[in-house]
Image (cartoon, rainbow, N blue to C red; front, side):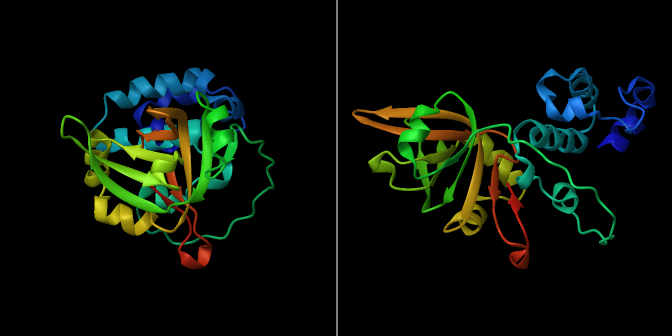
Length: 222
């Protein structure tokens, strides 16, 4: 991402905060919401072709919302297969930046409404539904919806964006049903009579990660 941004705006290199990095400093990644660089790149990529905008949106979402252990590989981020290169790395200690909640712990989920959280659990079902005005939506259920259990809702606009990335409803069902899944986003509550469901609305690429071991191909970022 640094190389792409510098190709678009070489003068960014002269204004970087650390001589030890190509572009992004530690503070840009630890506290991205306060980063002047990310705001400048928002403006820079807003004027770029849609494919470049998509890469920036995905990168920005990962920096802001995805926990360290769920960061996708470079190959998955780009959506291409790369030749593997073995490199020497240094261990890094990363502190969690948001609460990690169990999808079945309904009480804790309801206590955390209003926070940006990561929720993990096994997807029990993926159901197509319609809003009151007839618009399609998709419910990713981590339990029994009618018992007030946690779910993720994907509205029509997000379904269109997913379909444009080859994630139609059939592909989503295949990828999610029965799998251990991580969801990151703003935790909300839906009320229907006496029932209250904790929920997260899917809005951006990267919010849903299927947690799979390396022998099954590794994580899938949706």
